[in-house]
Length: 234
Image 1 (cartoon, rainbow, N blue to C red):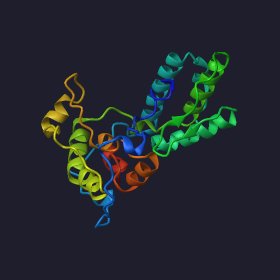
Image 2 (cartoon, helix red, strand yellow):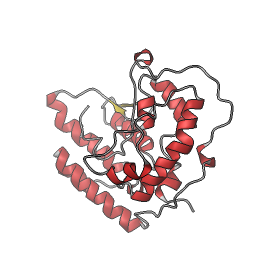
Image 3 (cartoon, helix red, strand yellow):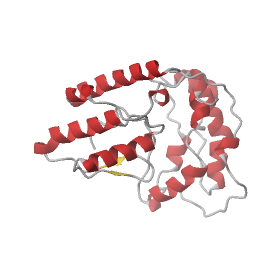
């Protein structure tokens, strides 16, 4: 895979190895309650970073400038955006469909992320232009791609502790919390070289099949509900 897509789409942690390759295996236990992330009580009130359409358009244009430069495709600066996607998965689906319409075989994995073969050298330029054009037409709303703030970091830490970890364990998965940092340390070091490499969802999903992970993600989303996490709830 090339790095053109990952520069713009919100990063998500995908698995995809064989299910028998990890110690984080499923035990087959049956959940004893109904899990719904929407019922979790947020511990922080998040204010949106981009509150108006002009702010979003300006952020989008900055993203396109970077994509055009990194991909060597200045033509995309003239592309007209067709819509906003609210999640990386939604954008992936639209981009994949757009690429197939241009004759390039691209698929979306069950957990999100684009799947494709590296094009031959003779097609590399055309492929990059098509991909970046499709991304420019169907970008993720910049409201959902900004760097996380300290309130968001505190919120996600609490969500992991109060909802995600218990939810994953209720699905029969073992969550290793032995290296969990304190909330304060997690927040203050997140954007530094001393950042803690603790991400309970991705480490627990090592060795879980993509199909099973996609099912689990419906019940145990990796992050809090989007409107809560980005401050777009009414």
